[in-house]
Image (cartoon, rainbow over all chains, first blue to last red; front, side, top):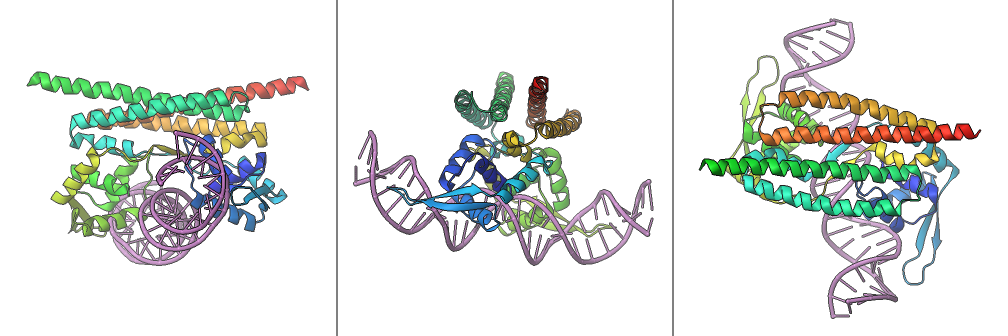
Length: 180
Length: 180
DNA sequence: CCTCTCATGTAAGACGTTACATGATTCA
DNA sequence: TGAATCATGTAACGTCTTACATGAGAGG
């Protein structure tokens, strides 16, 4: 359970409610973790029953009362133990596009080029978003800033690869049509 | 279900049995997907009951008989439809190290540097492995070769980031000790 | 009027991981 | 003797996704 520590980590900064936690995870770890309410609300209940957080309700004028969670002393200890431990597992990248890619040898080369182009468009958009986040985080601590930098650099690496891949595929295609 | 298409894709090349499929996925998509027998054997049964593959047993002298699977015509059609469709979801990166990283502000800076160093060691090892795979794949089709290239480039980007991050963290630490 | 945002949650199902069980052979 | 490799599989458990349900207010 990793979402557990992501939540516990955010609660070190300040007291938060589930809805806000989702926003922050998507803003700060968006390129790594997706989260949905189906995970967050049960996870918060678990954390509470383990005694790592406490909850208080804060009435809201136009919406259901917020449930604000705070870390307990036990929660802080457990979090710093986790933080100081070496990460158990390796990075893993899941990408439906990359899963398709090595099989493009069995499909239409033109369609492959189209799909690569769709990915280029996608990563260009993401690049702009990441640049915005970098500006917003100018004042944050190094760790947060470095994470933004990594996002940008991985995005750039991906884009460079997509563009050079597209060129190579196009070069191959034009060779074929010359031959006809 | 994406493992389904990974298996179906490998079966386009040649008939395979579950054990071999696992090896190939780990060799070819190792940096994206991890697989285990708990997924593969049930997945093969599903593919069979959907009529996308057929199975025949091949006796083996010193081990249980292999169950060799072949794609059917239906399996080929379903696979090429999937291949030509645009990938539904975006890339996602899951990394327990990167999940910890933004919270290092709450821990011991020296421990953070240590953990970053552990990651550097890990990615250096992976870099060597990837270089080996590249050599082995010299004769493969472009798609397979490009995938190796991507693995190498993402690995390099990660290493560069880790190294510059470590330097920055160390610079900050030495500033602090000067101040004392 | 309809959709979006805020704010909570549940239930079902899909997907993935871990651990177990079997059994012969090869290698240190 | 013990571990690793080949080869099959199941069961239990964790995690994640999707879809649903509620309800008020803001803005086009």
